[in-house]
Image (cartoon, rainbow, N blue to C red):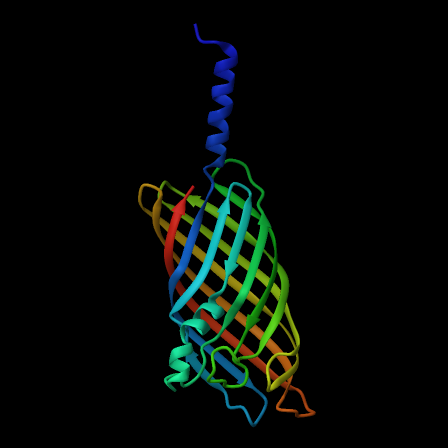
Length: 242
């Protein structure tokens, strides 16, 4: 006859194991990215311009059980991998857009393994090419702080998805040699669809949209420059399911 205490312990262990099967770990390290960035300003010395998305990226987007985390270093990864091309004069305009380093931390609510929804806080150091810089590590940088909400959903046995929206504030007294007194704000919207290809591994696709507004002094001018940056990306990476 099976010992009751052993049976209870076994059932408890199995229940914990089943409870833990929530989420995925999306690895864009390095990942691929396509898309575009548009910059518009009201400064006659700065023309409106558009450039393609940086192809290599570095991002980890993860949810497991209750906790959601995101680590992004897309701008830093692009900038450092393009230094030789900059020195060789092969870069027409720096595509440094995103985070040098930024993180999100969130907590999800929900029962079972099918759904989670909750808030997250964001902190980081980002960059946007607000002065048509050709040097990838010399674009205006700024500190970011903000928050958002995320939603996770399991769809069948092979597909899992996430949606994330949020708001952030930007600030830096000395963004680079040309840009001073920078302040601004922005919103982001990201979606992730992951497909289980083999066992616990698969592919992840992340469409993302970012809208940022900045105010700053350019080139020592007394009048502030206002700029809008719109980014639309599609990211592809690998995923591990929990």
